[in-house]
Amino acid sequence: MAQHNELGKKGEQLATSFLRENGYTILEKNYRYLKAEVDIIAQKNDILIAVEVKTRTSAYFGNPQDFVNPKKIKLLLSAIDFYVTNADLDVEVRFDIIAIICNKNETKIEHIEDAFLHF
Image (cartoon, rainbow, N blue to C red):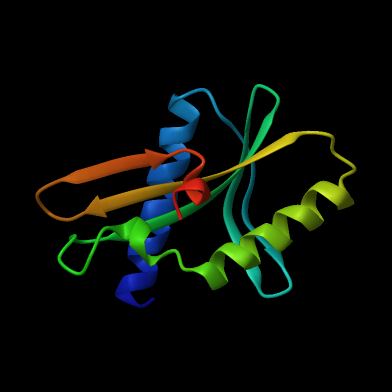
């Protein structure tokens, strides 16, 4: 497996553990709809949360969250819209980013709630 794929998998595992430790229930991992993939779909209280996980080994080229572009946001929106409609859910939906910097020296996790409001 390519090194960036391994880093991505490790990041998703760290994010899943982080969310569980903070009271979230994990409903889906790597949910796919057409060309979109939602890394994690979680729930806390009555809120459904779509989580995009971005993992890097450093912030040299920018923070991990800076790599969520408008095209990715549009794909995530369509996937969650399908998920909610298909499951006939009546829930508030929130989009979060978990940005992880993971290297030999440290692992830093930043949870950005309502991340798309910041774009």
